[in-house]
Length: 418
Image (cartoon, rainbow, N blue to C red; front, side, top):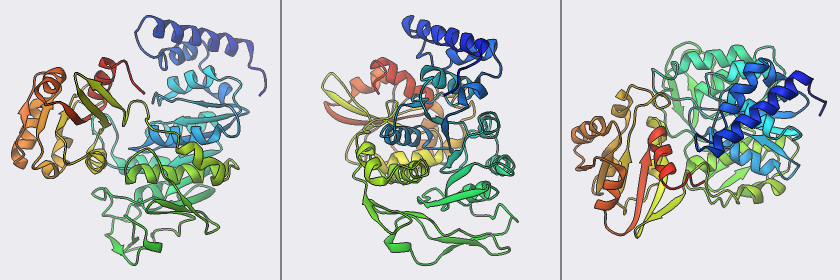
């Protein structure tokens, strides 16, 4: 990598110092404050730090942090990788990640879906990975069709190689202006936001035979225009991934669930764009057991609690799929800035799958969730705090599903296990 200009070197160094002080004083992990300090001193610092690296940006509504971790873990086979491992996915977090590994030839950055056009323009990343687009909190995230439209505009005229999930019509539409696209059939379980064609507004027909026994995916096409699902280059087929050469690769991940198999398939397509063969990448994917606390099991007073994160309706669907229906479950909901202040999205989640399980509800907006469960006919116990919920439960295994800030509060109680 070329030497940074003196001003950028100073900004980067002072940012790293601020991050270190933040961690030392217990104020945070330093992944944001360091970048903010650096950008205050050198507003163009992100562009300078990103230059001369082989860089991938990873964006979606759900699965960004996990997929970023999988890609970064695989790329370590080739050398040092700069990455925002804890999910600080806006420019300040990107600056911190790149400053912290200033000599790394490779970088993988998770990017908030709203910030993707800006970060792509700033960094001129060579690879962009897109997994899904679905409804999120409306006061925090833009309407998803508008996001897809911004992606289309961002890719037009750019040389970036896009890796995209062709089973999601909105992702397909957003990626279709890119100069080069590798299509991955990673499945789409949540379809409530893609019944209409984003090109013309007509109805999308879904049907046809499943490819090679593939789970969760069928062909889709607009009834009114020519917009349709592209032929995939990579295919998730149950526990296997089929590459463009027809080779079948068994995943055998430690991370649970169909969503993580989809993340892994997209990760394999991404590292292939870096020149890394699946035979070298898959063993590294199998080492990933937890991502920023997700899927971690923590223990307290004879109770083993597995932590699951769910931030929106599609995320809750995936969390329910991973959750063990035989176990009691704690649900924790906040509505702080990172969560979105509006909790009306709770009504888009089908909670009937919880019938027959002991359900305990906590968090700052527990009453909102309690009302939703009551309407769904789900018995539950309301708890004033997470500690009270844990103490109420018998010894043994427990599942915990929480949205973003509630999840971070629980992680902090257990020393931010990762």
